[in-house]
Image (tube, rainbow, N blue to C red; front, side):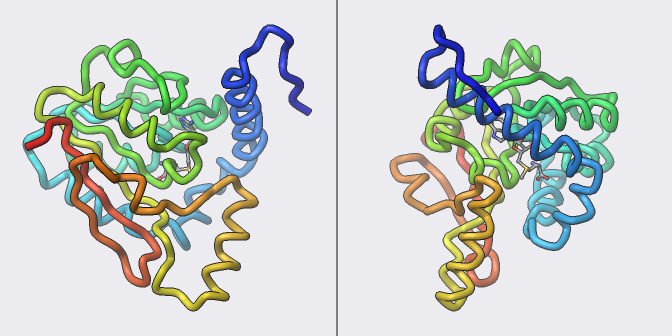
Length: 216
Ligand SMILES: C[S@@+](CC[C@H](N)C(=O)[O-])C[C@H]1O[C@@H](n2cnc3c(N)ncnc32)[C@H](O)[C@@H]1O
């Protein structure tokens, strides 16, 4: 069990508990993660294709990079681009490092990671794929990422939406099941006051959002 140190702030203690949970959760499941997530992390591949077709960027960092699955798809489609990955789980990072030797990786928490120090430059794109729904403070993570983008940069997001098109009983069961893994589907209020475009997948199961760095 995780025991907070006496000198830790409440934020440090919560982060260390989260890191500990992630390492325990992904320690074994990372080996079959990609196979099982195909069945319910919808919308990822269409977002990756859209990203690859946009030739205005040359560098991309995925936050909550997981096994490196998305970076591998993107690298295949855009071998000329520079890629990086950041994750709060040491287990996932280790996995991604092995699978993507051409990318730069660093441990960090989305809410305050220094992208410049981790990646060596401000990225043109920051990708959040099914990870905001797992963060302790997704709004802070988004605001922080926006400030770390290169000029004219953008954030691309795919994640669980409010499930509003499903029957009530299915919504509740799915929410209960996701909460076992510390996942909370996103509400659109997360984007209030931030420039963004938004679209939903069928039954509002998932959403795709784009947030530009600049208000134009
Ligand atoms: C559901 S997985 C998604 C992985 C990958 N993006 C994908 O689409 O397959 C969520 C990832 O976010 C990471 N994560 C959770 N909380 C985090 C945080 N606060 N900062 C950075 N990464 C975090 C987890 O360790 C995990 O690798």
